[in-house]
Length: 404
Ligand SMILES: Nc1nc2c(c(=O)[nH]1)N[C@H]1C(S)=C(S)[C@@H](COP(=O)(O)OP(=O)(O)OC[C@H]3O[C@@H](n4cnc5c(N)ncnc54)[C@H](O)[C@@H]3O)O[C@H]1N2
Ligand code: MOO
Image 1: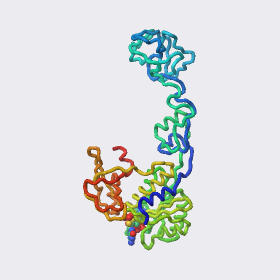
Image 2: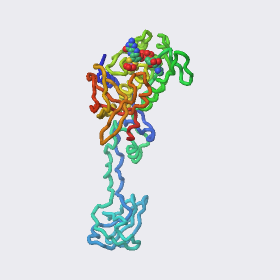
Image 3: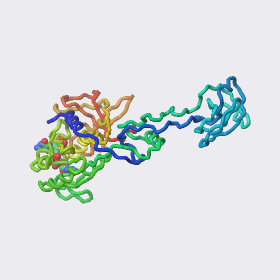
Image 4: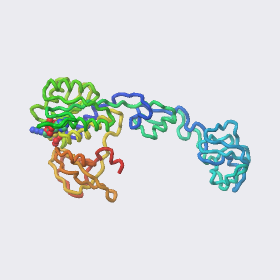
């Protein structure tokens, strides 16, 4: 058995970004930039006004109030060619319009009498005020988005500002999802005696999608070597293969056996985590193969703790683990020594601290507790008792808590 921490580090050391592609800017939100992107020109490209007001020569405005003759008008979109602020004059200017020759300051309209022919300036004027200077945001040649950055609306705005319609990003890995077991019935059918719906395929596909990768549900391997061979072969064509069930000590737990027959190298089997103990990880060439236990709760938790960080790494993300934060236990918790225990919790924020209560019955088979969980407490392997009021590590489960 490997420890929870070893399992994670072995997995993360075994995966790498799957490649890059150039995609349309709007489709790139949430993706990771694959190369540094440098500014092809200065931003802004020319000096321009930050205010609606008057372009002036600051030397003309030494004493206030002062009166200047209004000699022209520059709306946004106008060209400043041939427009000049002569001594003793002002040019009416709008926000974003290029500042004319001679101008070294802009006076906001609120600080004037808003005159047409002549304007009275009521406030002192400082050289350079309210001018956005060429290249002050980003100078030509400067890297403005680094490889490894996540594209958010600000990156989209800047890439668009520099005319980048296509962006180099890391590719999304394809993830084959294979369920195993004779008891499984397809979604949409009513399970008969001894049957259950293949719900893991759907929740895994949802989790894969939420992690930014492309799920491929390839169906069910029945409990024969032949069926396993056929389906596992198909699954190994994807960038990643996830199987669910068939990895504990049952007579018919064929997954690891047949994977080995197909040339996969088992990296570990059994991890010091509960739920999720029977998890196996193998490599077929460089293709990672995650064999997750079949209990739906175990499948989701092992996906969250082991597969999700791997999928994020494969898409070029650098921060792949959810940040841990401290939660105060409302109630006592007990566990056996030897394994990290994952506890499904609900959270409450009081006076700047997070308080955790159990989300319900913590038996692995209780799916409802997973539905009710907002976060996951990670109880360390060696400890056995946590008193009410003790602090333990936790992380959010899902992205909804970003809204808190
Ligand atoms: N003698 C032992 N028995 C078990 C051990 C053990 O160490 N020794 N480990 C237990 C633990 S912990 C887990 S977890 C399960 C994992 O078993 P498998 O991964 O081999 O999965 P199955 O036994 O086939 O199924 C477990 C459970 O999950 C349901 N299931 C399976 N596939 C799906 C699916 N696609 N969608 C929804 N639900 C699914 C299945 O019906 C079972 O109820 O083994 C324990 N036993
Ligand atoms: O470890 Mo199992 O995955 O408890 O249900």
